Image (cartoon, rainbow, N blue to C red; front, top):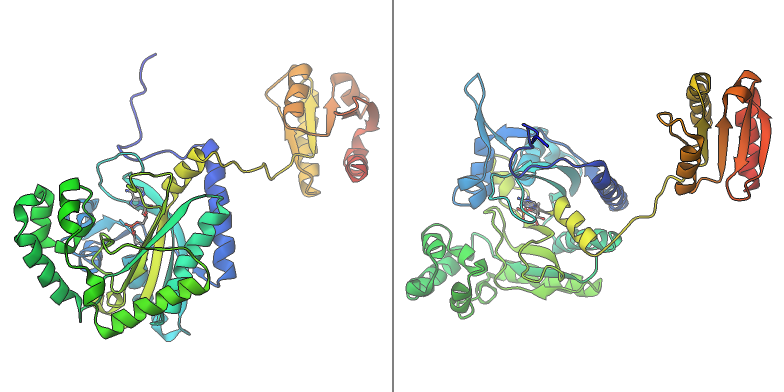
Length: 426
Ligand code: HAM
């Protein structure tokens, strides 16, 4: 067969009907949990000013340094396809004066994002996230609630063996000193670091802590840990967060090497993995506190915390754990037809059933009655309506009980009322 000329762009995927049921289920569960915890939905444009991300996420991060899709408009503006949601939502928070609304302000989203990454398993150039962001609250109880919300959602997805990694990466009061300690420690062992980490040592030394290279991990295992160098306020915040997590019985793992790949974080950072992902390459969820971001973007000082989950990774995990969802819309009636006149009547009948909120299935493209009834059986429908040429000419249809095989002739103009009686008997 000749290969089709067009393909989806590298790293981008169609979400085909088979996968839509996962996406729909995820949407429904996320919306339900968001409603329960009183998060309000927000959607921002797919494109934003490039500088929003370079200032918000940080110039030395991979996302800003290498992974943004950037375009220049005819008017000369430089826009980027959003690589993540937090900076954009913080922009919207400032732009619409949401600081003046009652705080904390709790927002959620479920949207596509774009990163020019090297495509591989669980890593795409267009991917979907659902996320939660809370603005205007310092108290670590909100950090705990964010972690709890994600954990509960993943549990509702029926994912098993989840691990929650938490850490604190301090703030502008304590991190600069810790960074200095780290740099001098790593400088003394520079020959034992991989090439990437030698660059990180200049640009972003904290990222060395989560390098996956074995030789770097050996060096990292003896490095000073930030937890021993937190200032009083970060230390208290972290201690209280852990107490809240203990209180709700949420299992977590202290990971002193968790630093995250975005510069806006202060204090709490967390990631959630599935243990089925042995190498812990692909976090399902990542997030943390970002108390300085709103100010960096030109707003009033507003503490904030949030997180986001990668939907493709969640779907992949659901499939690998063989999680299936039972069909939710049960078809009540199957309409089988023979011949053009019956087809025409069927079209009208389908609308009559729809108005009465009775779900019907049909196979208007098929002509063989046998094939149509086989399909009705496959769908598990209890009653079929058969519209043959003869019946339609006589203004009737055959109602067939698919379990007992019993058939009855009913008047076409009374079909909906008759079928309602059948359904009520079930
Ligand atoms: P992130 O860790 O970059 O954080 O992304 C969050 C999640 O999105 C990841 O754990 C992963 O599941 C998914 N993800 C990221 N990149 C890709 C990709 N290339 N392909 C597939 N899935 C991907 C953020 O985006 C922050 N905005 C999270 C946040 C919200 N922090 C505070 N509030």
